[in-house]
Length: 348
Ligand SMILES: [Mg+2]
Image (cartoon, rainbow, N blue to C red; front, side):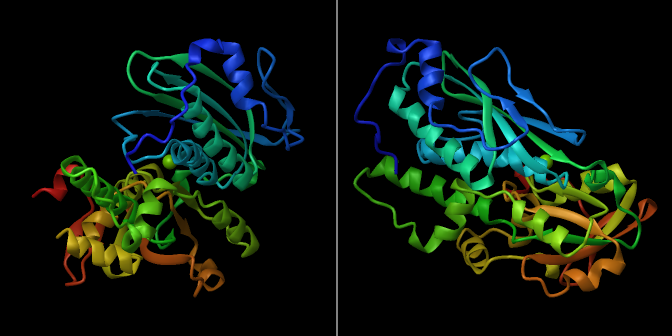
């Protein structure tokens, strides 16, 4: 953590723009039939043979979205791809291609970019997506990353946010709050390191939540699981900003309300113990923490037997009429409106 991992430094000027792209992408192979032409021409050519194309794009800025003092570049490359793939899966689609563009200042040597692309390559391999384009350019300060992800789905498979209806069940994959608490641990260790650089942090007790922050996964497996269980969600969204804001997006797009039950929110034991250690309310963290990249979706009640007891899925509430609003039912049985709480809620 925090030390210079690039003792060897090759300045980018030696390569030139085209040499750089060629060098960084030389080992990427195309695996999908739909990738007709990839990197190396003026543009890529894709052929989805009548299926619908799903496209999403995301930009990440150093100092805003990531901090390189504890985010290894390989992890950053991986995570940058994952956050985009998550949006494709949230449409109940399959991700097939990505483009990756980065801007870096001259403090980044070639070896740093190679490390970043190693992470990109690992995500491409794990999630079976082809890198078909991108750009590299210089920036005056810091690093910027822009990734576009492309996916496919049959028209009748696509699940937008707008399809939920009263009495549908509200379901979430995995568990929540880990990524935010992982960030808190890393921020704390960074401060300790500033004071005493010889102090090597012991992150072992926090490995689950630190990994949730540094190396999140997108729930491709949940899309496949739902298909296997023959469950098509009525509406779906991925949890990038926190449960409460995603629930509100889903309800707004569907013109519905909801009841969410505090005691049903899935939490890992590390999340519970670490929130206690940081003296933070664990429900607030799950509701507002963000970056968990789990899927939140609604299903018709008749599909409940198909998902019942599945360890990857938790029913956390149900959809109501719009007029009833969106509410959290607390452990103490109090009904409070769900609000898109910002970071301020952590510092009352
Ligand atoms: Mg999203």
